[in-house]
Length: 439
Image 1 (spheres, rainbow, N blue to C red):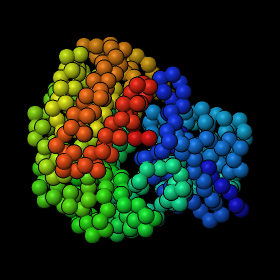
Image 2 (tube, one colour):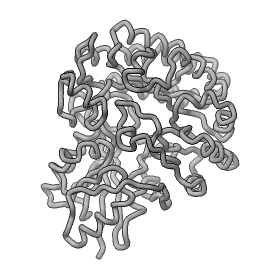
Image 3 (cartoon, rainbow, N blue to C red):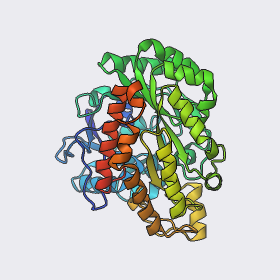
Image 4 (cartoon, rainbow, N blue to C red):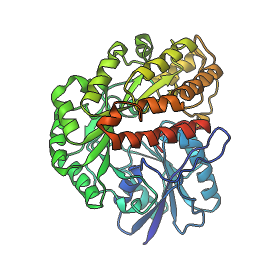
């Protein structure tokens, strides 16, 4: 029996309900290439990354697998409906789908909840037998995977790096976080030999950079230290995300920088300690942010930050103070998200009980639109302040100040020019009222 799955990574809608399209997709998803590598004998796979491609609705694939990040959920629903009309078997997965499986099931034949490595073969065999179940769920206990099907993406319009996974999950339990909700404080790491195998393969394909996919690479410092020692001889440049505690581990920070890491993404969330307390992130100290960021920059690592707008303590004045903090910091690519009560998270339960959610249509949730009334602002006011913040920080003056006319230009000119380009792309998105994101 020969069957084919067409995996689809949906794009998103902008605020005018138009599809967001790009010339290149820089952050390539790893889920579909990995699941394609796990298909049973007799099954083949194709991949469509909608942000750069048109969806082939006339595909000869028997089965359609739709995934994507949370704010692509609405587009995923529309794609599923169209393929169902055409008589295809459709299944869906991903973080948002995993948190609202009953809602997703209204639009497809099956929902894969949580990690899918242990269930993809079962789903395929059930399709062969004509006995497809509505839900598939089996949490992974170890993270050992074959080489992802990078061949599905290398001939597409992508950036100059590929993803490689190290670990999954995070020991922290921030109340707004879907990772925390799905993994409940667990962190699972891959065998270092497997990680190095994947990096070496990416290098053999001609890439000089990779994205180390990990929800928090400092969750196991000893593991990270050994991994960096193995990465260093490969002479690759890489990016990842982690918690800010790495700045207080000099040995690990030195190893990370020397192994080729040049960008780390930090979830700073807020410059107000009380705000962090309200979302169970008390292990961050905003009063220490400037020192931490300087320590990272001094090590040769640029920071792409993520912060939240619409926390309980936020006011128009505090959001302006956030802008001033970013302007004075060494953050080269700041990003922001409206606090969103994703179903299944502790935040959602708290806000529901308080009657503060203004829109319960989760398919409309997006990082650029608040659906929470706060003690100091309505949801609409939060959204307005969100865009004011972005417009200020991505003015040409501020972009030039943190890139071209910055001392980093003398130290790392090529890298700084790259981030100047990133900032300009983000600026163009903001003008379209599209939140800069990882697509």
